[in-house]
Image: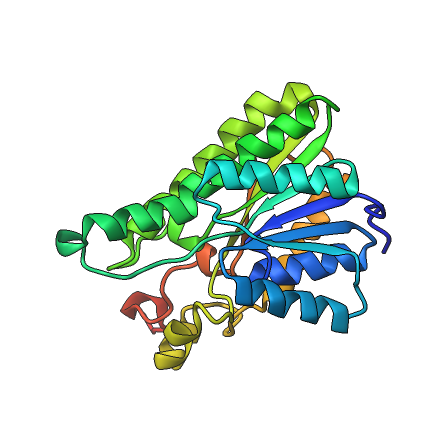
Length: 263
């Protein structure tokens, strides 16, 4: 199905691995001009090779610290210089460090907030300035199941992603008069390098809590992101879309009252 994205410029922050990379390659497959960034030069180089191996040569990949506004702005300027504008902006950068709430170091708290929430704010702000003048654009943020369901030792990450949800709906309202749509994707357990440890150390238990009984694939989230960026979703804004194998919709299947019983 042609999504009508050919020739559009898609920027993916945190687009060299996992969900971001999957989305970037799908945008390229749809004929978009693609720009990605990562804090890691080695990840940038690896993605460039991956894209080249997939037959996509004209991709801009830069090393950028997305927690620094000046670096994001400079990256956006480079995208405009290279491709002529920005039509789609995806905030995919994120990460976590686990730890008990009562003893979590201040620097760890700030790291989690900056990487997940501050970077998203900077991305929205930067993208909006480029899109407002042309009265069109799409911004998509990466949220998480953790934004709605608290997990022990990950409360700061959940709070940051809940903030992403509010940024999404707030920005959608403010930017709607400029023809800019803002939405978010909220994945559940996805089989990426970042979540592999959590998935496979307690695989049976983890999968038992998901109605589809499996982890999602980065490509499945990438597909959703790309579809949401298209005009086929032109009436959707201010929405956080759950893509979690049904986890958000059901109780823990391991709870006693979730088991079949006679009575």
